[in-house]
Length: 153
Image (tube, rainbow, N blue to C red; front, side, top):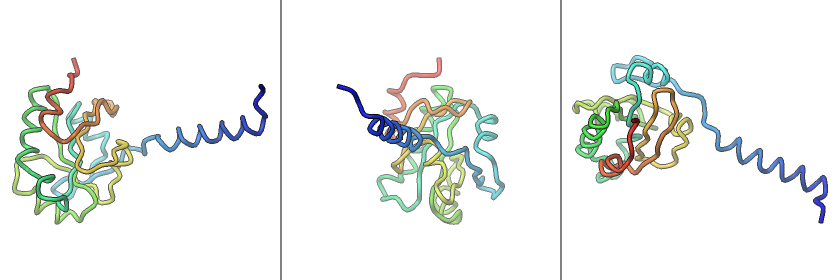
């Protein structure tokens, strides 16, 4: 049985569309806690491979637990990873209120561009990012998930 050219073209368009939909957006420009802009690629160059928690102050209390973020940072350090929290889709003042008094390093992403860049669809989330920008893992934002993840070595 032969496939008609019309069906083949439609299938090609459908597959091409699906593949293009799953492509990451370009690396965004983010805001540091002090209000200075930094390109995501520049941050990675400076800090190397990292565990990145995508977070927001508007999350329910159990999902925005800062103590859990500190535990993830400790596990990341044990795995020779940098660590950063990216506060998403909120005014920078809300991010400062939620993270400003902690010792956690954080960046601000007002419109959620990192979600599109990392192809992450849930907040909070944890991603392990190679220093070249490649997403190595998308994990549950929990220290145990990062402990269970392999390593760069």
